[in-house]
Length: 350
Picture 1 (cartoon, rainbow, N blue to C red):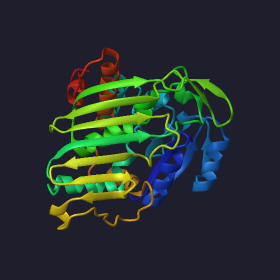
Picture 2: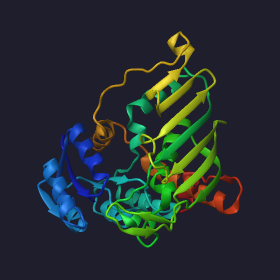
Picture 3: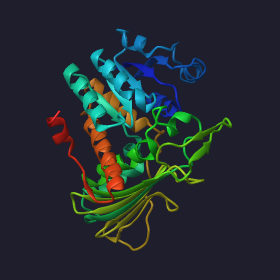
Picture 4: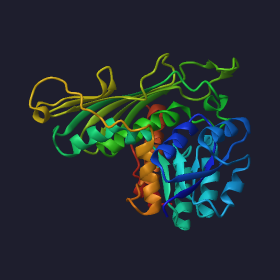
């Protein structure tokens, strides 16, 4: 299979990232896009040369000329659409968060395993060039073991849709909507999170949307968590929907025995102080490959479908992210440190 024939389900803000990434990766033929309205899907179809626009996502799954689907719909629709896609025999790339609960994730994974299809959850940050470079340095032992990290996910908040802030609309709050990026990045870089101590809050009980409407905020817009990793490292993680400026996707500081690494800070995309690596004191900023946003991510997914590269285990990672999020909420509610459940144990018991 040289070209993967794709059905695209959803037309929200994140659709541009995936459609641009698929275009940059090459080898993808997006044949149809489905969205609840016609205006936004039609605009995306024109921008990316997609031949057909539909409003019923089910019609995409019925097509024999579709090999895989990308699902970028609101969080409360993920389980229904992903399970139906698995039953239709389509490979799946599912936007994070995988579901609204670990139970939803388990049901999606079970459907994919029963159907024998490839299921991937989209965690875009792990595919950034600076993340790849820093992870390689750490894995090669050039920095010494990681001792601690400090991570921020901060934005002004999604002001373009009211559902992000309401339970009835299917929103999930800052921990899953924004913090899931950081939870996955933490696990990807530093290994399993074993213990969580956290607090969550609603700092802005009312939000003004970009179209002028006002909406009551029913879901957390700020969370602060500390992690203890299985490796013995510790970390802090801020998840913030109430910062006026926000950070550049994320801000990550890593402190190792022999080095310090900063990602997406005032020192640039990646800068590290590592005399054992560079042979001199002082901060060093490596040259990073100038790849289009999303190209690495989507090329890896497409090659996995084609059988040209190993498939990632991001379905289990999606479940793991939910288990950490649930530990954050439990810790905040009970005011104590909570042990995070292991994905393998959860899947074994369901």
